[in-house]
Length: 254
Image 1: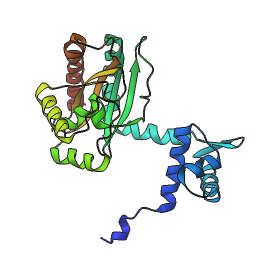
Image 2 (image 1 turned 90 degrees about the vertical axis):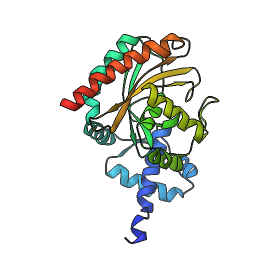
Image 3 (image 1 turned 30 degrees about the vertical axis):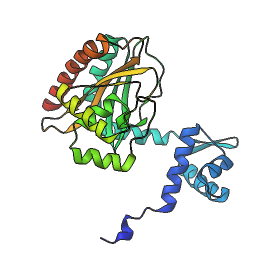
Image 4 (image 1 turned 180 degrees about the vertical axis):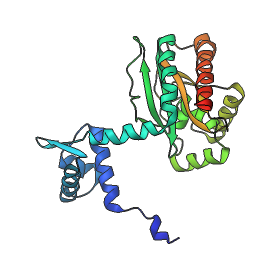
């Protein structure tokens, strides 16, 4: 294969970087985008003009925003993940039973992507909306997914994304992470204690198909003041493992 065929198309990359800035900033002007990306305002304008014509961005006054056409693409991508429809009823039940927030995550390109979230009446407000990307090693769901992958694949993910520290509790040492993954395999479920966000704890379990392939992970998360001791170490894991069992059966026989 020609090595040049692997080279990214610069203009395409620039368009996507502009969309990411608009998403992260919830709208931005040409100057803001140019400054953040280190490119000329004329280049930003040309890309925005094309993206607007293709209905991927909209303009209000002097600011640009991501357009709803992107929503259609995201919904379609989520629907293709069969685990979404299969797990959704159990995620809703977990939220109701626990009185906390229940989540579904999948791995893509070595990152954890939140696919679905269900809130109880007392769930705390977090940034874990559908489509939110996180480092796998910083969450219980991410570690549950990593524990279901071959060590070679885990090392590929580490080589690509590193083990950045999010809080003082984040696992940033490779040997410590692999030891944690071994414990998760033995135990059958994962947890994190303030490893991505201070004050937040979470218990999770991976979802696998009949061949043992990891499809994603489910979790319950909430404030440390409510998820500690017996709740985090016994009650939640049992509820999550019960949901895991139902989801995996439905996956196997759907």
